Length: 426
Image (cartoon, rainbow, N blue to C red; front, side, top):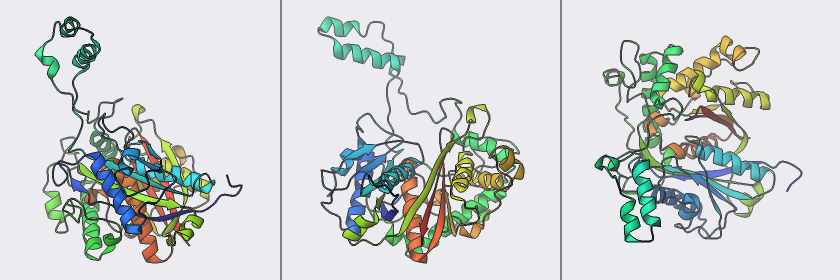
């Protein structure tokens, strides 16, 4: 362990194209997707056979067969099998939190290198039996005789075979994330027009970034596809405004499928290391991960489910002595266009910043021209656990291309949590 804190270098990342669920990757598993993202990283930096100190990865939607997904996936690549793998999950912030955890170990000298990664597929979601029939199967499996096995099914009813699919809602409220965000949009009076405009900018920015070659250094073609298949470069306000609302109805409903992230399959990985490790491997440093913060809100008692990033960013700025305007780039996860706009409105609200965040004044506004400059989740897609690594990789590439700068990352998650981070290139 080092007595002094070391700088955490972001070497770079790689991801496979993100694709709408039940399209290109419909037959692929989390293991397939994660292994592909990890292999893409090894190929990009010619690190075949390399023994890393740790791979930290996870998924939100998993099967029982996904036992220690991180370890099993890395063994399907050309990485050294001596590399340990740890599986974790923090909803949509999984791989960003993984990067912060690896970064903390690098900073304190516990490790020299690590990969943070995430994967998710909602094309291959787990379907199970109800508790009653599952209990029968468990009893039958434990039976020592044919008679005991038959006894396990005494009183069986066909209705017990009804499949159970993953719930699309918060366990403590029963509401879907979109329904929670609809409440937020109403509370903060976020208009349909503003949401559609943000969605349009997300698509156009991502489309332009692909055409300019930005994603050549970030995305590894795989599965017969080389681009994210949700991006609509020909989107117009007229097209977006013609779609019906979802999550709620009535005159105040503002959210649509187009200004929300689609269900997406994909995976992403990012490599972090000490400066000494990077030098020894002759790898240039894209940027440095310099700060992070995780916070939560009491959404069960009426705080907005996806408002926790407002808290995480405020606390991180207080810790670092920076202001909200001290950034050249803002990577704000677009779970929904409304969520981003609620976050921006909260930072601009003197009442919210004083009474909820405990600040002396409002954090203020940001320059929207600096936000999600290469597109965001509404356009690119959102394979839950993969989004954090995608954003870290994106921002690292942006800072490297710019030559210098500072970027802010903000990610909201299910469960009323938010994770924020800062990356810098001197």
